[in-house]
Amino acid sequence: ARSLFITIDLPDAENVFIDVNEETEKLVFSGMSNGTKYALNMDMYESIVKANSKWKIKGRNIFLNIAK
Image (cartoon, rainbow, N blue to C red; front, side):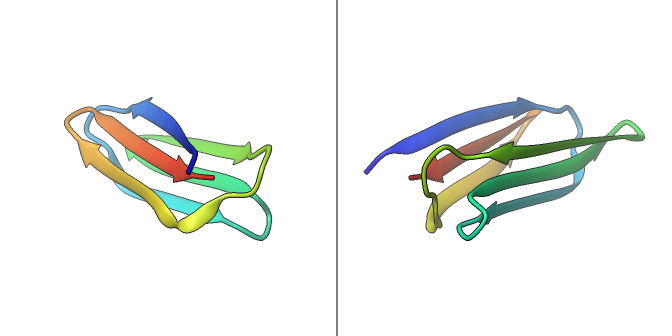
């Protein structure tokens, strides 16, 4: 199995939303930090597997492991 690893550096992240959409093959992220909203909408080159994808917030980073 293949995976894509992404680290988002966002100190004191709040209201974090992450979605891996298999139908549209997109990764969607949004979150707040110090009153500023940040977002990411990324098209994936190949199909992704939502059930095997994981993410966690640790310290100032958000770690994504997107299964392909």
